[in-house]
Image (cartoon, rainbow, N blue to C red; front, side, top):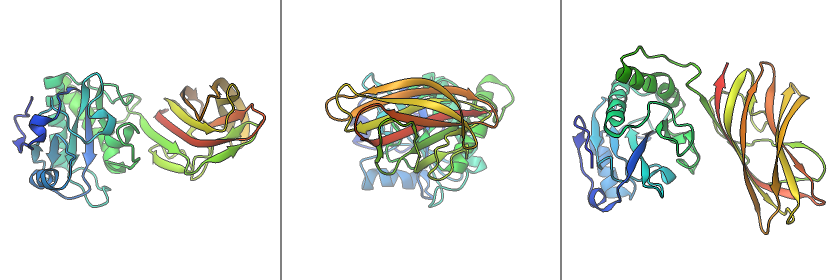
Length: 322
């Protein structure tokens, strides 16, 4: 059980002794949506909820630790503790009531200092997490597995700070190099979905219109639109689909397609969802480079004889703008 030497120890019991051990492989930053000191955050964890984070960060840069970093803390959903025993270290930080303000200079300095410590103490790699299970550094809204409610924590301003200031600052402090902000190694996060199921008729390629926008750091998606990424850019991620009413053995195809404005320009390879008893599920990998002036849409083709219903479509992407 590791305790940070420059954090104030505010140990939560019985959680600190009762909760299982983890092997920390990730660090995840949050905003608590309240202007709280570490002491007030400790009181909230102790008296008002069965959730908790490892650390609490005040506006003035003060840092409290509530649970040792090798013990599970319940702030990150599936990342709290995985079946293999790995898990995430979590930090809640003081914010305004909308979680819309940036971290203060004092908060940024403590985040960098703590990032250096967790890297040196636990070997967490000096990179942004590339998936929900990938070791590294991140913030709460990056992956649905960490943030099943799909909210915007820690807020747009802080997500940008994390990528452009905090993580480069951690890397610079560890390596002795000058921080580099932005750049190809700092992707932007996109997380889109649909608000309600829709019918997919047979025989026609149909673009998914994403009506739910949890996160769009690139600004490429328009409300209720089908465009996911605008070039020039490189991206990688997944398209998660649930289809209802697809007969056993029948097929719905999925592919990425490039457009120039509203003109269909090029298709990319096809993935197939094959009907099973009950609903049909698939997670389609999507990775591509797209030239300037073009856009990417995800399209589906129902090859069955009857209409089916798309009950869930979630696009989760990391995008590097060129």
